[in-house]
Length: 158
Image 1 (cartoon, rainbow, N blue to C red):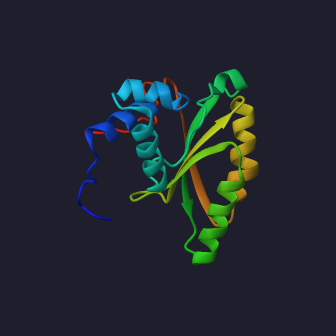
Image 2: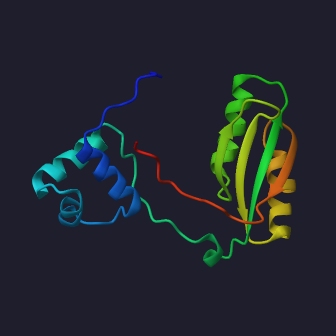
């Protein structure tokens, strides 16, 4: 990875900022917001997509409205194993729908999982009957979200 910061024009930054706020806006609305005509705006968005700067568009769904009242962060320690064992663990994580995020970590534990669940009993089932049985898992430690202070997918563009 390069230490060099990617260079984006003011128009590209404006496009990225606007689409991070509202990914469903039409090209006409976007062009008006960022002060470009429609064709150049469309071309710049297409180039940002082709360059994999914009990787996806999605709806942000309120998890509580889906009945997912619990958010837990699970620290996972793995047994020392082969690369294949680690791959099997990561495949199990990817297959578990209630794990919404997973990060390989430096420090005291190997992975950090973000897990959503209907309630504490459901979380217990997920952790005890699933995560603890994933390949290579030695130990897990769970912490529960008490208050969501900030939750954003918007990245800084400065």
